[in-house]
Amino acid sequence: MSDKSFSYVDHQHFMQLALAQAQLALAQGEVPVGAVIVNAQQEVVASGYNRTITDQDPSAHAEMVALRLAAQRLGNHRLNGLRLYVTLEPCTMCAGAILHSRIEHLIIAAPDPKTGACGGHYNVLANRALNPHCRVTMGVLQEPCQQLLQDFFRKKRSSL
Image (cartoon, rainbow, N blue to C red):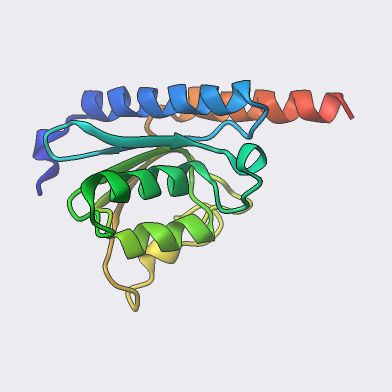
């Protein structure tokens, strides 16, 4: 699949949808991270937001929720040719799941310098010994996604 069918405006549109998912997480008291999976026809296949507290599941990160739903909807654990938009750089667990699911292109809003595993702290996806490979684009709508997270953690710290 070629990225020529997706313009920067398209990437912004789908990241806005991921940001809306992050707002749903925020409304439930979860860390506000959202994810959206899109096919080559620019149709949303699945979306998700952080649900670790809600589901009492440490693996219920936004990316994992969206990946599981996409696999169920498509009837296949291989998500070849799909794009994943996420508001915060994925952790190691999520980066591994992205590789195993065969997502073609990962589009990230905000880097995570502490636990990011796609270039922020370290880069699982850049390891050429691992197959398959996933293309990464960083910084689409970074400011509003980063601001949502900063506001969430600032509020959390001030309530302690």
